[in-house]
Image 1 (cartoon, helix red, strand yellow):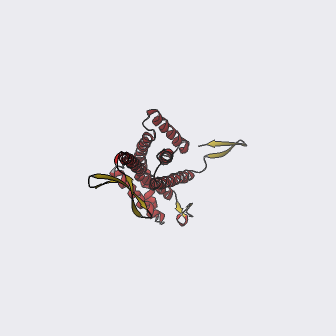
Image 2 (tube, rainbow over the protein chains, first blue to last red):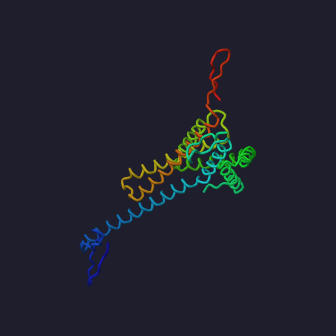
Image 3 (tube, one colour):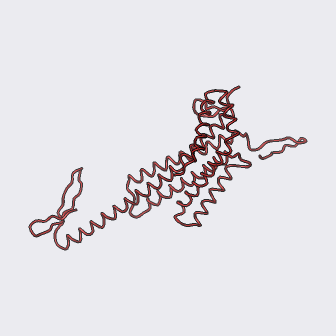
Amino acid sequence: MAWERRGSNLYYYQSKRVDGRVRKNYVGTGEVAQARAHADETIRRSRAARSERARVELEEAKTLASAGQELWEAADILAVAQLVAAGYHRHKGGEWRMRRA
Amino acid sequence: MLELPEGIRKRIHQLQELSDKAEDDDQGARQELRRRLAQEAPEVVARCSDSARTYRRLLAKRSSGGSPLVQEAISERARRMALELAGENPTPLEVLLSERVASLWVLVELQEALLAAWYYKAEGASPAFVLQMARLQESCNRRYLGAIKTLAQVQKLRGPSRVQVNIGGNQVNVSR
């Protein structure tokens, strides 16, 4: 969205991407254009704030999910060690079976 | 980040190396693994269990949206779930694995709630955000199911939870 000055007048344009190309549409001048520009700015800020909230929330969710990673890997190692010590082995890398004596 | 102490991390790494050797049918490694598990596992497992409880409190706090009552309710529900999963007279490892399942349950529930909240927000969420959240959720679900499977495998080691005993011609079922 942009104001363009020609001579002493300001003209308001909206830019939209159509089929991958930016297309500039003339909106107007004067009070009507100012009202449209104000509305556009409000929408833009609201979108930016929403996008920032989403980014923060996603980061938090990722951090929370990865926080226990090392601990859960340790639990897996201990469980496998226990099974192996008891004489089990992974049959073809999958199911745990008791090793034949 | 929730990190294990360096000493514990080192011992876990050593146990993993021994376990890998024993899995390749190295009898010496298996005996050494048994010895090390008997000597070191209780302390290592206890430290991991402490961290697991800290992690669960962290998750409950985030899931509660700042309400102490909800935080307590989530913690208590997860604690009961872990107790129930561990069964009667669990080994320390079974306790740790049960706590892992309960914690991951809280994590999965939290992520579902977060995603649902974004779906129902009037302003909506971008497709990229929903996609990333869904991927994260899927990965946590996989970990959750994997944790349940591991617990079941370790519990299977101890045999059936009920033992049939015949006393004086009467069959008696004894729970462990």
